[in-house]
Amino acid sequence: ASGRVALVGAGPGDPDLLTLRALRVLQDADVVVHDRLVDDRILDYVRRDARRIFVGKSRADHTLPQERINALLVAEAAAGHRVVRLKGGDPFVFGRGGEEVEALRAAGIPVEVVPGITAALGCGAAATIPVTHRGAAQGVTIVTGHGKDGEPDLDWEALARLKHTLVIYMGLSAASRIADRLTAAGLPAATPAALIEKGTRPDQVLAVGTLGGLPALAAAHRMAGPALIVVGEVVRLADPARITAIARPALAVAAE
Amino acid sequence: ASGRVALVGAGPGDPDLLTLRALRVLQDADVVVHDRLVDDRILDYVRRDARRIFVGKSRADHTLPQERINALLVAEAAAGHRVVRLKGGDPFVFGRGGEEVEALRAAGIPVEVVPGITAALGCGAAATIPVTHRGAAQGVTIVTGHGKDGEPDLDWEALARLKHTLVIYMGLSAASRIADRLTAAGLPAATPAALIEKGTRPDQVLAVGTLGGLPALAAAHRMAGPALIVVGEVVRLADPARITAIARPALAVAAE
Image 1 (tube, rainbow over the protein chains, first blue to last red):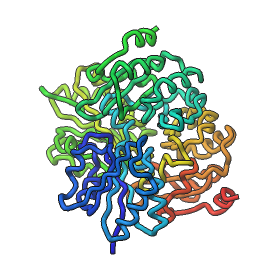
Image 2 (cartoon, each protein chain N blue to C red):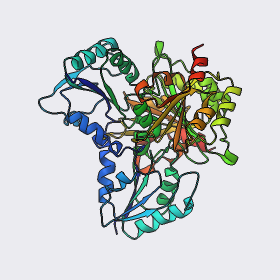
Image 3 (cartoon, rainbow over the protein chains, first blue to last red):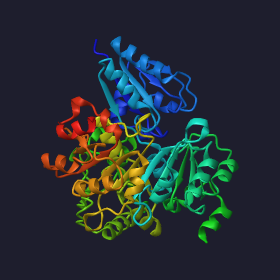
Image 4 (cartoon, rainbow over the protein chains, first blue to last red):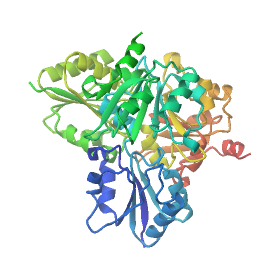
């Protein structure tokens, strides 16, 4: 049998942000194993006679443990199927794609990885927030806000020192702690910050304020995720026409 | 006139990594303003009757200064054309897209930003190097190796502390200095490192070794760029079948 697996990035939400390669591989699949984060409009590209297996991972809430997903991919490919493992964003940015590659490689299954537009860039484009910008950010760091006991294990002082754009995935529930840790590490509370919920989707929410005002911003919008936190001077470039809400007192502080 | 500009990311090289949205906008353009980094096979998607304007920026070597490019985009859109500004990778990752957005916004020209697969993720997928990986990298930092006097102005100590994956764009000519600065800042010379030249293209070169061995690796392959440097434990996951060359003495050091 010629079974194989493609780990495919579905991008940040907007189905038009799928790559040509991702579309082709998806339309060729016998079996599609997908997460909650993948938009229904992308699943519509799957062949009618293909099997869809929902593994329900919303990253924080693992319906099927990763080991079970790995075993499922190996078994389906070993049975001769063309399998697509479809993930929100990019398979290699907090997508646990590396673990799936290792499991498939150990089982001798051919694997292809099809990259996807990661949220930092998809949401950046949709909000007109350039993650790098001359004079404002010479680089970008992407981390996850998810961690043991609700606190990510990060080197806050190093992050505060970089003066880059800092993008935090899955950081909504830890927004308050993240703001505390970064300010304690020396990043001014007045540093511009944005919260982007459902980025690139028609119901995208773009809230702009400051690092110190992040928790209030999240609470005011009753955000429930998936949401992205962007911290850095580049937030000032966000397209005013696309901003859903500005935390005005917080911005006043920033302007001082 | 209904002139407008779309800043479009062409991705890392492979034309199949263009997004559906990028393809649509490109095929609809009256004028396409593009860089050297954009593959000819992507330019083949442009309508025959569209004008192509080559602005020859290979990032280091600006054939047309950025201010002239900004003015060109404004003038073409003001004349009522649908303009595409096509860039390698993503427009907002060292693409100076933010500056173009500011210039267009100041001139009252409508702008859309279409994200692209950035090299770190495109090359990561092509080399099977996951930029984040459980137990190996909790985040990724993307910086440019390009800077004044051939030396990027970066906080090396903070970068060395993060123990993330570090991806350096346009770092080939500064590879020796980058390796020196990072090791001086405390990152072990035995840290795995990769050089990826022409990533995602049929003639991709993937060289794997250590941070200390980077300059020798670049020299041995007579690399001329565009090339990407990846530093971090995740390099160990690179697909052995795709590695063009391994710096064996360097890897022996890493294995100690």
